[in-house]
Length: 107
Image (cartoon, rainbow, N blue to C red; front, side, top):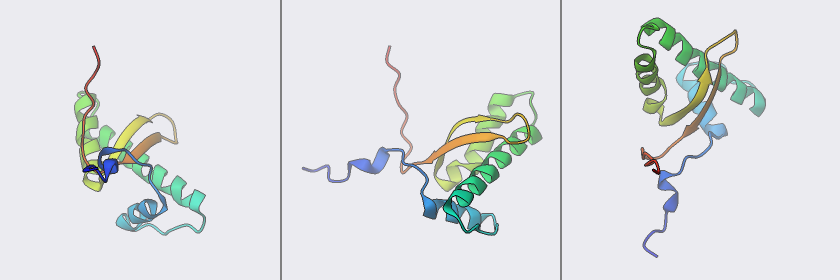
């Protein structure tokens, strides 16, 4: 009974209000449809991540991915998922989180 709010550490999906906040943060015009808003948000964050990684250099790619993830996603309380920086349209999956918690691997 003491644990009333168990959802603190769960990853949750980005909702409509979160997408609006991201677009306002980057001073971008907000599209009218929800689908267009989600698509615009995904495009912005994925292109920012890929540009940041390329700018830092590919010599230490894993280090540059960590630095860019921290600056772009963690400061906005988002969690980065898988991504690809190839071609014209980079793809990215991300979620928001309330508290940082790492999972222990099973051996």
